[in-house]
Image 1: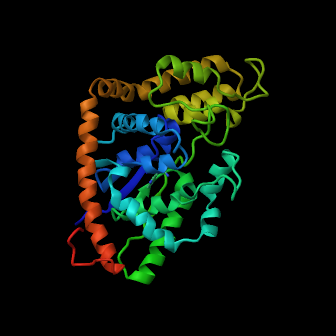
Image 2: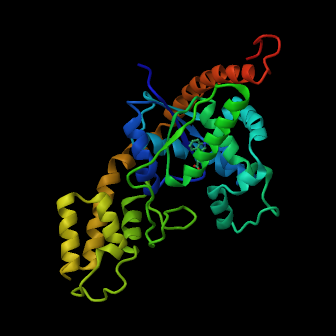
Length: 338
Ligand code: TRP
């Protein structure tokens, strides 16, 4: 039986953190055996809000791939490629742009949240490209026939937008495209060290997969704990403590129970509790850090993964583009070019 296809990816704008890990990477590692997985480095999408900083996007392409390989994505099983090197995606974005209204894009909750974070106002300084990035993302997924998209919860409205475009396309041009589904994690969203609902680079509350033990310790020591607990023997409430929250992710079941019981009974100081957590995170991330160090010393490995992955993705995209152009009556003179 043929394996189902996964298409997913990230913008190369910075290193990945534990929110990415528990939110989507963990699934991509798990699913790569069962599915045929494609992961794209979304440089074109990253440019939609970094067009004036191309260096940043370019420099983060390798960082992203190093994060992927260090956390267990295996290039023997998963095809990793660069979005801008598949021009079929860019071409398809234009075809799709007829199938979506500006009003619908303005209502996309993910787009709205991003604009609010940047304090942008519709109609003023929003570029055509940024407003349209969900259309480009729909092209990413469908140009490779993606059926399943393991991604964080914030991507849900983008997948829904893609599904609508697919339905519209199929109803006009015939049944050519597949409607993808999002695949969410058990831990859909990881909170920040400061208790913010979301861990994020721009929020300054993240632990990166590549952080050193010293950085991890420093960050954990700054995490927000139960504000009502002032002295060590005050009774604590782990439900409102970020340290207890991360213990749930990094500490074994039995030890976790002990952490929570001792905290409630006022028998565990926050400093000791943080030190224990920092140690557990350091150990958890150790293999990733070591793998990354190796990759940093061997950049040729990253080049090879990207070159081979991109060549494979390009071939697949060409096949699907042929069908799309046929359906859209754009297949002039047979299929000389495509
Ligand atoms: N929007 C994703 C992010 O913010 C990146 C992305 C681009 C993507 N194309 C995709 C995710 C296709 C899943 C599927 O990082």
